[in-house]
Length: 125
Image (tube, rainbow, N blue to C red; front, side):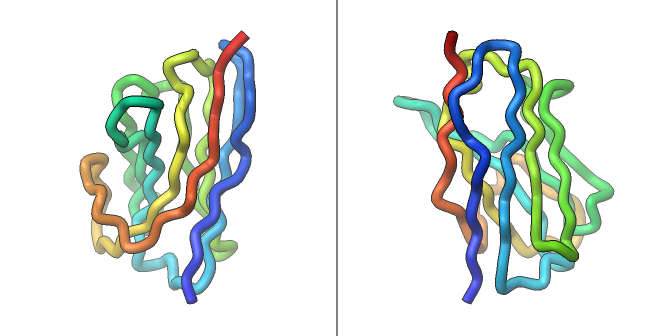
C-alpha cells in the first residue's frame, strides 16, 4: 500500500527558514514526478514546485523562485522543500503529491496519483 506523508511544518518568523520533508513508501519513485502544493486560508490550492522523476527538471511558482529549493532522493523514498526567506504570505498548509510522468513536470498538474495529508507552515512575528 502506498503512502505519502509530509513533515517539518511549524511556526517561523518572517525571514526564517524551514525544511519540509515528504516520505513516500510503496512506490517505485523512478516513475514519478514529485510536487509540492500549498493552500492558504480562503484561497485555492496552488502548485509551489515540482521535480521530474530523474531530478533533472524543476519548476517553481514565481512567488517562491529563488527562495525555495525542491530536491529528491528516490532511493530513500524522500523529497524535500527547503524554504528560505519566508514571508507571511507563505503561510499555508503544504502538501506533497506524486504523479506518474515520464518526462518533466508541470506546476499546474494537480491530478496526483497519491497525496499526503499536509503540514502547516505559519510565518508570523
